[in-house]
Length: 140
Image 1 (tube, rainbow, N blue to C red):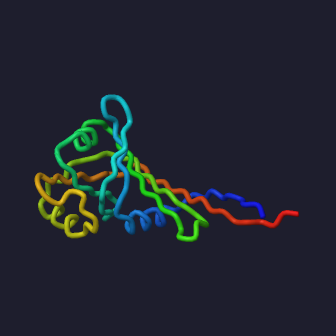
Image 2: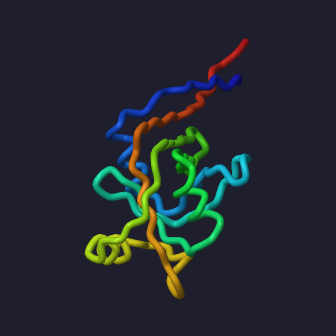
Image 3: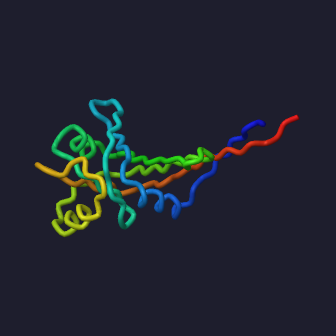
């Protein structure tokens, strides 16, 4: 048996669904001129990513540089396929108390749940997703 690999683009609807059903992602920012990636818990609502943080490197880098990247991925339990969704956009601090209450209530994983929590919103400029799948074919 030989395995073949297939790479497919995901629709915006599928990308949004994957984002809505995941809780942990990775934030890519530029720190001191170099890229860094941070794991974050998040919620995805109304086409935007929201994540809590404290006033540190991650928050300052996200807000100071004009662009951020955010990525989630997953794999099927049987290993037959894996997927990745990427958002490129701009980060903004959330200051609206009603919005903060809403996204806090939706949070299923809390890396930051006490102290000086600040919420960041990623306003997407580009949404892309890919899925890679394998199948087995008989070879003679």
